[in-house]
Length: 137
Image 1 (cartoon, one colour):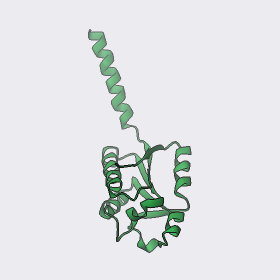
Image 2 (cartoon, rainbow, N blue to C red):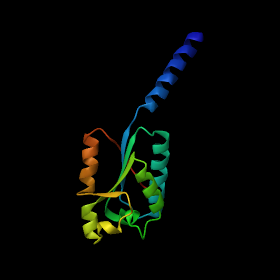
Image 3 (cartoon, rainbow, N blue to C red):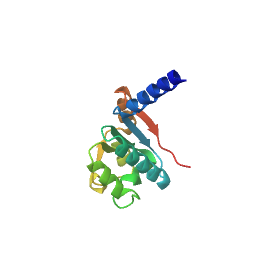
Image 4 (tube, rainbow, N blue to C red):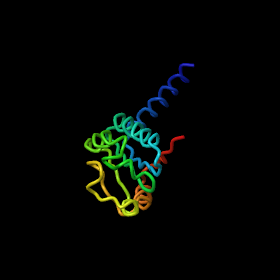
């Protein structure tokens, strides 16, 4: 029994150590649903606080446009705060901006523009980033 407990403690210690290793995660947001926007922020906020050495990127495109518009977003203040912390970035697709006729001066402070949201996600995955599709029902 003592040997079992020692092995178990070694395994648990290894799991705790593995969780301390920095990670890189890209979040994919395409929904116009404010619940999805709020849950995305909740997930990113929690993870960035729990793993401050890790990197997180939220990529928005398609119907998620309002998430990053200063005058329409229900999470604007959170995006500004998280973007200022350094380990979280927010990216909006230029193609989506063009389709909705949005200019950069309409975006929340701290949101960057990428040429293509889908390509941004694929490139992150090719670099070894984990992938989370955000959806809310």
